[in-house]
Amino acid sequence: MIAMKKKSSKPKGLDDRIFDIVALFICALVLLLVLYPLWYVIICSFSDPNAVTGGQVVFWPVGFTMEGYATIMDYEPIWIGYRNTIYYTVVGTGFNLFLTLPCAYALARHDFKGRNFIMMLFTFTMFFSGGTIPTYMVMKDLGVMNTVWAMILPYGVNVMNLIIARTFFQNSVPYEIQEAAMIDGCSNTKMFLQIVMPLAMPMIAVIMLYYMVAHWNVYFRALLYMSDPNKYPLQLYLRNILLFDQMLDLMEGDAEAIEAMTRRLQLRASIKYGIVVVSSLPVLIIYPLLQKYFAKGIMVGAVKG
Image 1 (cartoon, rainbow, N blue to C red):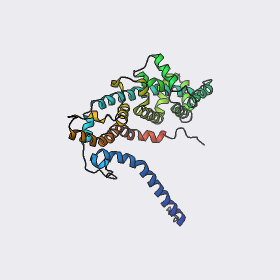
Image 2: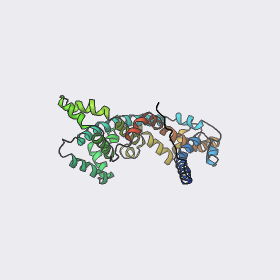
Image 3: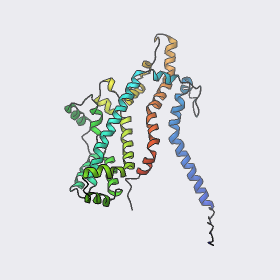
Image 4: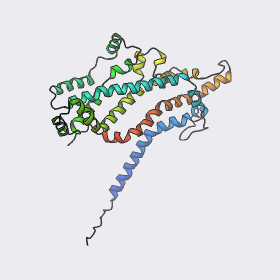
């Protein structure tokens, strides 16, 4: 008969309890500071405009209403921006992965001569670049102004994502597996697609999320290269509404009537917060779906001991 040893847990001292309380308080405070702005935007979008402008909304919606969202849904340019942004995000992210992953895999191969020098050239671009005006001139000379390539081509490869992918291929994909595949007659392309890529799914999910968020939030690029409103991304419509006071264009009715004008001004706050929620919702929905891969691949670039 085997005697089972009871685990003896040493009671925490006063110093340990004080430390736990302080750490818990700091974490709760940081969590509140991070989440409250998002929560505030959400509750303001559902609150009565008069309560929002009057500063009555603090923790809960005041005078629950969906009128702001109803007005946003009736505004056709919002859906044009959604369509364009989804297209730019899907095509742009696919183009980014198509360039980043093979390049990172090639730079991670030990038998690739000159890979350190090429990697140094990539790293150089992180600190020194031509700037906005030279980039604009290049885009104009290429003839891609006011096209989808103006939103995708200038940022085809993010060097930081390239470094993350290269580090993963070097440290997390055993080179012995690649050597065994080569001995069995596997080509480089087949080995990359059928062996390396399935093992790199956590890392791919991470950099894919980075690229997707970057494409979804972009507006300055469209501001420089786009002149056709029908090709504007969603964030540029949002910027125009918030900065250039175009909320009045969302409304229908007699602009000369005093009551209608007053209501338009009142709905302005609800519309602003509602558009922020509508534009951020797809990213908030996609992230939980990729969270399990994101948690595995977030430490890809960490230094291993």
